[in-house]
Structures are given as C-alpha cells and as structure tokens.
Length: 363
Image 1: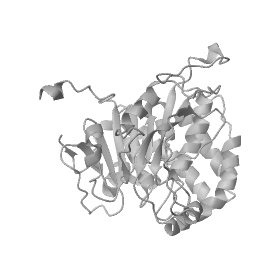
Image 2: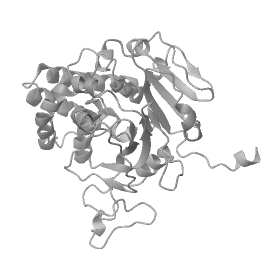
Image 3: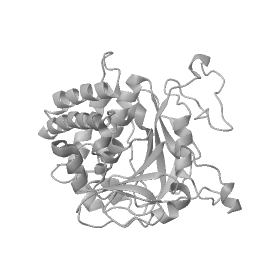
Image 4: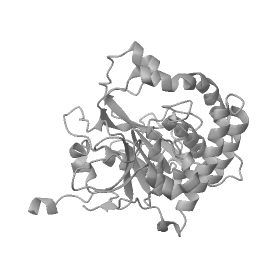
C-alpha cells in the first residue's frame, strides 16, 4: 500500500475520456490497465445491440449500443455510421471532457527500443499540452520536447507556437495500409521506431488514422466527424481520413496545430485485404477528386467557430463533390445533422438524456 501512495497522479485524469469502438469483448484492456484504469472509458458497441460486451472488472465506463444512439439522438442518429468503426464519433459527442483519446481494440501496448512499455496516452497528453509549429518548420522537430529547442534561424515571433488540437500516433507491427498495398505486401511489418513528433505544416493534408488518436475536444471536437460509412453506404475505411481532411482545413483556418509521430502502439492484426478492397474501391477513385477539393478549400473570415467552419465546409462538399456521386450530397447533409446533434448534446441543458440505458459500471 505504501508503494501505491507514491504513484504519480495520471495526467488529466478528470479531463480526458478514452473512446473505444468495438464488436467484441474488451479483453485487450487488461494489458492497458496500468495506463487506462484511472480514466473514464466510453465504449461504443457496433453491430448487434443485443450482444453482451464483456469489460474487465475495475474499469469506470459507459457503454452505448445502437439502441442507445437511436434513443439519444432520435432521427439525427442517421448521421452515426452502423457496422463500421466510424461509430466511435458518437463517443466524442456524448463526452463531457476536454480531451479524447481513441484506440482500436486490436491495438496493444508497444515497447520502445529499450524494451520498456510505451505509455501511449501519456505521450499524447504531452503532445496536446505543448504548442505546435504549423507556420514554420523546425528541423529538430518538436521544439517543446525535452532535449530539443528551436534551431538557429527560427523566427522569434513564431516561437510561442499555436495551440495543439490533434495528436496523431503511429503503429508498430501491422502498418495502416490500403487494400492494394496490403495485397502487394502481405508480410510487411513496421519495425521502425522513429523517436520524433512533428507538426504537420499549414496547408499540408495528411491521412489521419483513428486507431491511436487524441484531440482537444474543446478546440476541434465538432469537426471530428467520421462521416457516413459501413452499412448502407458505398464506401468504408475512409472515416478517419475524411475527419482528418476536415480537421486539417479547419485547424489551418483557425490557427490550430496538428502533430504526428509518437506515441506508437502495437497493431496486432491485419484486416482482410479483399474485404478492405471492396470497402475502399470507390474511395480509391474518389480520393483523386477529394484531395484536390480539400487542398483548395478556403473558409470565410466570418467562420470563427469550429461549427461555423464545418457548416461552411459541408456546403462546399455538396456543391463541389456532389456532382461526382450522390453520396457526397448525402454526406454533406449528414455533416449538418452531426453539428445539430453535437450542439443539442453540448449545451448546458444537455445532461438529461445522454446516459446509456445500461448505466455506468463502478470502479
């Protein structure tokens, strides 16, 4: 007991929720127990809502299934994907915390080159609590990390940096490849541990992966919508990337920063490349138009909040991507519905109905 009293208090213990989308029992939490047990979990159960998801004892959590989503959002539940991990963004919406960390249930604790377990959550928090440098690239990468600083020639006027909205972590073992690359390189594994955190420069897009991701919900939360994917939709596996393109355009407009690099998790298993190809097929073609759209997207000076930016972006999606396929008109409408639902659940009177029917497990 004496030892326990000397343990440091986990960073942001009461200010951060961990969001996990799943269709299975969460046995993987056992290995994360030293790092996650002090935090509140929001579990978003995808698929059959009658299936019972088992959560290891000792975790403080809420669990939402599709019935809960339908009950809480009513008709607006149409904006939340079904049979796709994109459903995780419902957890972002019902959270009441300032920060979110989201992780997939096939992501395990990785080890650094010295063999020590990596506390991914702690590194994400460090990334979020220090500024970003989107306006000028620092060749020693993140100047706010211990042992680093701004290099000679870095403008002093920019050394305060910008608030960090997003921390995008990486993966050892199974890389986050698209289906064609999976098929060509079925045995490839990522064994390269790069000890670096970089700010993605302003004006540069990136392919955001949602399996090891943290963000400041108050700074960028309303834009972290993972789109319409999965059941009844013509596309899948573009949910996190769609959100990433949206948040990057909005972060650039609002003067916020996005970091990528550390921390690593261990991605334990590869999904089926043939199933993935079926989900990604249209996206592979469409992204050749989607990327230039986001690269050229501009937002008006009147858009000063994330919600205003997102609504303006939704109109551009319908106008410029709608002619490619009716899906984008539907997606543009869903983006508006998402913001409406977000605002309804995140006003002072919102506490009334956003609890799951099955209650909250005790610690």
